[in-house]
Length: 508
Image (cartoon, rainbow, N blue to C red; front, side):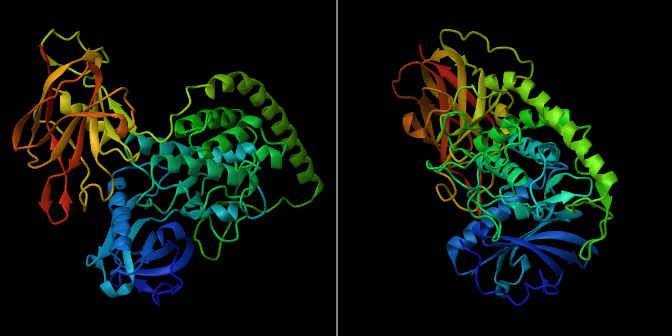
């Protein structure tokens, strides 16, 4: 949805919003995909600067209001995640709770202000050398990897949401992922930011106005950075392009894969110091140190230093290429992503790393592993899945809280269990306090089988306590999915289900 052409009177420097608490200082950008404006503001109560993502729209537009609520909800979930590569969320506001209904604002995400400079200012005078780009990008990549392990999506896929810290690191300064953003979008964003640093061009839809768009080849794929600038290392150029590919063979789908190459190149480039920190004073910033984009003065001494740096860069780049030429073959030759399939984040039921015991011929059977199965790449509380099969009814796995029932935000959420060998089950018993949760028991051919390829063998509405679900006849299987299609509604827009224990019983 594009940003509204009508500018609210308060959304100008000096304007006051949020029931008079926040005074806008300077606009940092806009994300048209979320109908959001990005501002630096002053918190009048705590007397500090903050980064504000302001979601604009008409409160009477139910779809726009729902999308804004989802963005605010996801930002709240991310508030517990802390990492130097992400600005900490300190507050969220919605109409009626800090926002007047007549302000034309559907939500606000307030985060701590990141001292430094805008990413777009950094590349204003041209692309950066490979070593500098990798050092800048590594902290952001590590933050994305950490967030994905925690089951979170950051929304780091727009350049105006990123700032450069005073010590020369990229940081997500304006949190608040789009309501439909998935983990794959963060990976694409990381690749697009690398592409931007190397070429000065943006390679994803919805970029800022005035930023050159990345060129594409006859097949529609983005042209590699080293085709534009031949001096760039082939492997780094390849990482940028393959991160942008969706599900084709050789595409990169995780931030860990990007970090593997960034780490190697950054290690080789650590001694070159291609972008020194300099003292600077900006009219709109109180920072004492920023990363400059100014070109060096053209005196003989600086020319000599520049040529030495270029020579060191050439030697280091050659070394990296030789080393990575051996490593990259195996790195990009991993089994290709299946594309379009669900995310399954696995937890081992135990912490000792041992394999599940060999099941007895009949009776209870323990899965070897269990994980959250999600077709939108937004798994709920993925790190808690093992609590559902730990034989301890005082621990639990719980879904996120949803303002609307499925399928408003996603078609459902599930727990996928895998067994050491194919089993034929007679029943599944679920212990839960979440009355009226509707579940389907499905068998699958693999951990990440598409939902439409799974088969329903039992259905039930959970009671408060234990619910035994008798299963239909089925072939032995190693993968069983507990698929939730309706959550327990506790009123007040709270739709959430808790599962304390799952008992799988083998048939005779």
